[in-house]
Image 1 (cartoon, rainbow, N blue to C red):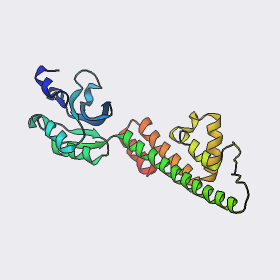
Image 2: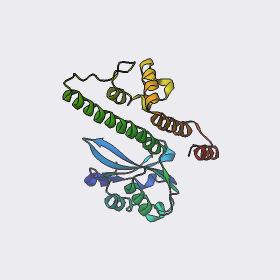
Image 3: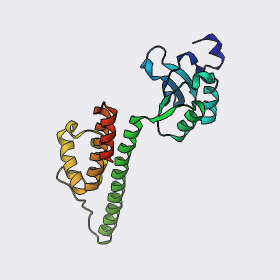
Image 4: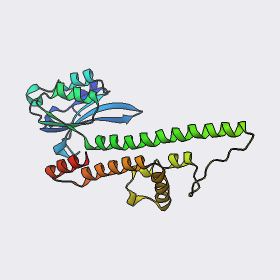
Length: 224
């Protein structure tokens, strides 16, 4: 680090000499839960010369103010910035690198698809919890003990939905035997959840296994 940055190094550092045409902008949790905005040069592949800026926090006005310390002649040479889907990040890029094309980070796109699957699972679980509460109340009114339905793998419906969380993040080829059995029961009960899961995994495979841009666009169009 240049000694002339020591005074403000806890809040921000800049290395304008590392700038290039293709950059990445990310939120990173570095220590004690503190978020930092990090700008890197993709051509350096994480090695020497990769780091362009680190700014404490993610407030767009503050981060933009720091990045605009980079000479405009360098900033206007940036052709592309890869970023997540947060509006804050988009504002930072548009104001700091006016000539750059914005590219959504595929990992964040995949994460959104995975999150949608989990949201559906959670919604079904709340339905199961509500139904169980009603059945418990009815059993109590009838003076009978409540006996939950036990599925063939030993789970109750509520447990099935809770314990399926991890398998929905994985390809089915990586499921353990117990996860495979649980998935069969789960998808038989909730076909919409199976549909969402398979769409999510198919999207992940498109991103991870496609090298050619044209082929990728065709696959995405078919997926959509």
